[in-house]
Amino acid sequence: MEASTPEPASNPSAGSGGTSNTMRTLEGKKAGLEKGEAEGEVKGDDEGIASGSSTPLGGYDSYEPGFYIVDVEQGSGGVAYKVTSRLPMEAGTTYNICTKASADICQKPIPE
Image (cartoon, rainbow, N blue to C red; front, side, top):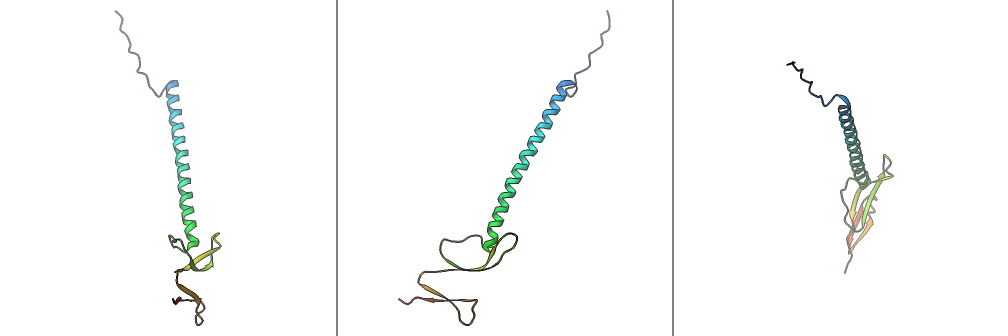
């Protein structure tokens, strides 16, 4: 009876099977990186748009529908004008530039 030599255990990372697994892993990492970059770009674009749209509104986060008297100044960073103050107009009120302080708006109820 002859002694038999045990065969070496197969190594999954060796040979053609290992190369295929490594390539799939690299392809998966690349696909994940590309997807992450794309999602990051979308998030960055969304945040930039939100920030850029609020800049000319003078930091006011919202406006109700209606009419406003606004004071504007020269903008910066690609924004032409920036709102520095706003005054919502109300029905039944007249608005005039105050004669003593031309930067102020005077309000007066309309008599009935």
